[in-house]
Image 1 (cartoon, rainbow, N blue to C red):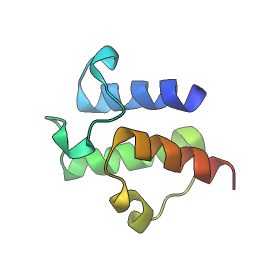
Image 2: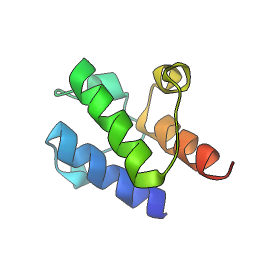
Image 3: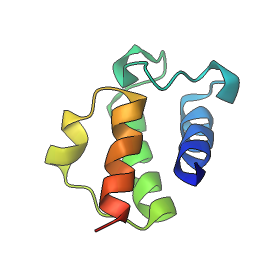
Image 4: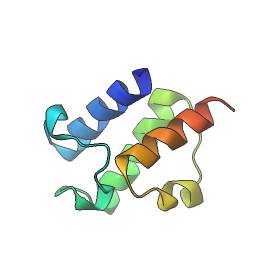
Length: 78
């Protein structure tokens, strides 16, 4: 649950959306402010916030917010 709320806050801040508008089934690419710069900002913030290291291969395979949440949890448990 902590990952979910922290990730929602992080995405809302970087993508400049309201947390309540965030749907975990949405594709990341569907967000209006999703671009390569914000994608990298999100990656670095995730690594800092959750103390995980994600490879570009892992990160680029993620399509939805839920897949991103699951990846963070998986990497946190390693």
